Length: 491
Ligand code: BES
Ligand code: MN
Ligand code: ZN
Image (cartoon, rainbow, N blue to C red; front, side, top):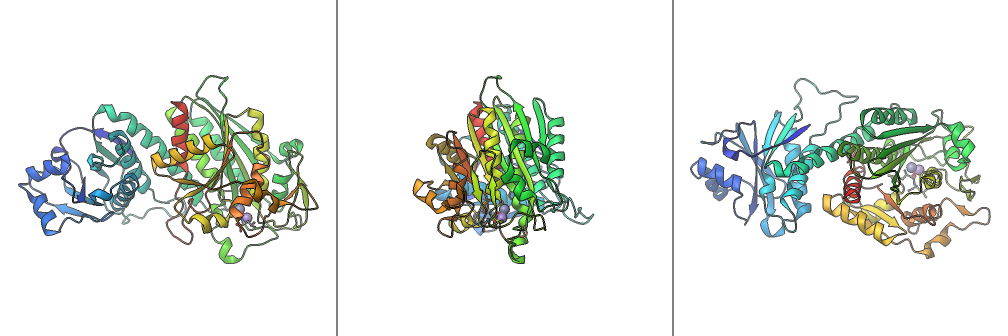
């Protein structure tokens, strides 16, 4: 969708819908005051009578406001004035965005960022509101196109503000595009979105943006490199694996790149350690890590950020078969380290370890892998926080802060060496499962063994990439966190 700025007085803007913010106990925003004056105090009266609801995330349409050029006003509640912060602001904006999407509107003009939110700049609030409206406007259409009578998403939205805020709009648009791509890919069914499809998508991205190069490794290439852990997972599938490498050069050649690695299990049946029907149902989402690093890569390339980024997608399908890898198999990873596979459903770490080893040839400034890695992460953090593990305090702090800035939050978990012992086995350098206690951390520990002298972080998005059992589809996360991190690195 198209986002732009309009600095005319809100009451004079010709639009299908003017979006105005209200809080409980706060004063009217400039635009609310303007339409209140124009309508002879109608807004104040409706606030008084309770016809305008100020509850966080609730909204209502107001019609026939005298003196207001817009066809209607959407009054959006932001809750109690004294409780308002950027997280609650974002939540209300997303809710308003969904209301706009679900009605027959094609355009709107949004003034909500005039609200006073603790510790935020006008630039940040405008960007957050614009990104929220963009994100909320998403509708899945790939295999269920919109019908003539279904409410159509918005085509464009303007935001109250002058040209000094243009970069906020540009960033919202780029991040929004990244979220959209991440959701589009994640929501696709696994019979369409397989490893070859992801490779095709990467090819399209490389063709579309400046300063992007692409390399795709086939199974033969990976075999030559000794990626037998990744290839072990792929062996049971009729869809051959790909290792997709996208390079964006936005800084000088000598600048060490940030490497983003995405888990791209396009379907996780569990392999011979087959999942139950219930647990398998949503395993098309096991490539959300891949989708999100591609989304962040797009945001970065669209903004032509001054940073070098390499995006690596390990695209593999995990299936049971006569040729599939078995519990008990010992695989030799590209690093030379041996792994006893005790559960073929702990496959994510097996494809990621080879991608992590491969990535080191780029002499990275930092490596960040993103993966729907463990159910245990969801038990620990639920659906709100991404699990963050890292061997570097500074990188970890940067990622947490990027997530807070754009309200796509991560929470750090301890990768203490005491947990490493859970991966011991007499039969190999490590086993691929660490037992029930702290399953999210033993998965992180496993990966840490392949990044020993690197600056590395791991994001477990098993909970944040989509809401289990929820029909809403993918969240697109953590495109926001990653894009903000790259933006911070570029400036
Ligand atoms: N993709 C799953 C993790 C997952 C499960 C993500 C549910 C999102 C929702 C991963 O490959 C997996 O199966 N992990 C196992 C690991 C276990 C066998 C050590 C898990 O979490 O149960
Ligand atoms: Mn699995
Ligand atoms: Zn998986």
